[in-house]
Image (tube, rainbow, N blue to C red; front, side, top):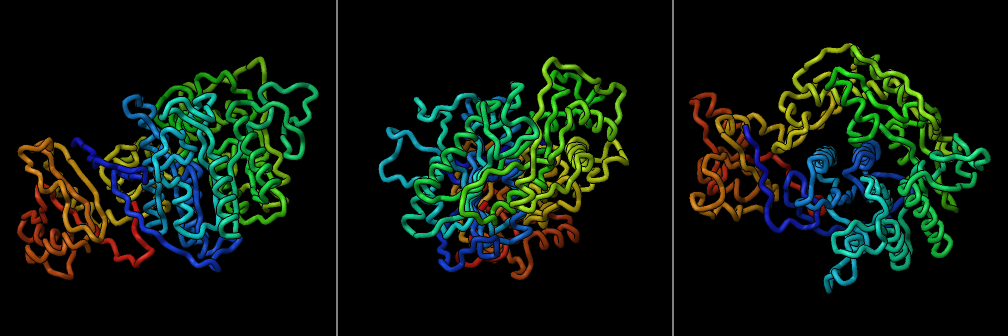
Length: 558
């Protein structure tokens, strides 16, 4: 069956998940609700929230502390669709899946913005426009800010601080955030706790000298000579900026120098992600070409990295700090490839390679242990089992290669999630997970059978979603289907709220039982008569979701 996605015109900068319209209203929080520690009254802002670390942090905060509100900001890479490659689209779709996973977990606690908050070019700045960060900080009393967004993660090279063209990639995220925090402090007399991501690439591991003042394992207190990459240079500049804002304006911060983070939902095109992908989809060596296979790196599992962030978010100090976050142990890519191949044996194993220059980047985590109480909990061997199991589930959603070594996954999710696990951009999934204990239910679970029954004979499906509880009509329903651009051989599905005026009016008109959902009535009629009775609105077939009624301030945002 072919699946087509319908994207409404006029989509704004507010994040659209699965092509949904976001409805946002202003909420005010009491001043005395703020706390320097994470509590149920906390309001957390996360930048880069659809990224690998940001999405996992949002869900961990919700599970552990249940904060009042988690505000998620992500640019979704701000891609130019006419210049997008399949590689970009695959990355975007993984981000979309992560963001949808976050929304499923957080529900009404989350608020999403698809926004690039870096400084605008003056000549393109609309008169009367409110900067996005200023608007977000007006939404409520933010108690914690975690800055994880990274303009350099796609390897764009030397990003311009002042771009020449409107759509050029530009830097300036840290400056924008620090200026906003300064404004909040000056206007309200209070200051949110600020944590940000730095990188181990600030250290010189690429071309170390014999007398280098800070050899591996790297220590935060020792001097830094030359960063190992442009990305590391940008992170070092971020650290300098935060120190300057502390000296001039008293804005404190905690910077976390992350070493290589890995795990399920990781970033494609990174070494461990690609090796795990090859391990479950190919017969050849996990790492057939490893020109840097003997380089020593420090890999930290995603759960440990998130634990470090949550500890840093509650760390109180009179001075800014930068802290290494790693495992404290070094390993080569060749050794990791051989560990993966012990889980998924293959006829052609990875051979040990020799490289003329061997580099080493390992964290000294003494400061993290002392200040944050940080201690990595997931060993590399256990983390690799989780990683490879997740890739196995996505590659073989119907079971496939049984393997007793991969105990963390092995196709144990709902049968309705198989296409989601394969990464297909289908209409909203029941849940997206790698094994049963991680599956997160959503409102779509109750209508999955109904949707499958309605679309089983369709050549293709065109869908739209509007879960507003004030929905009284779908504007496009007034179009003449025969004269429109919609193909007549498509099934047109609209996901709406069961409690919306539109559904209640149509249920009354079609004599549906008031206390029965449309899905329940469909099952009853279909099981007794074989008929498929549905609610129609123009050319749209409605699939109502049983979304509970939210009070003011608990609006449901997608």
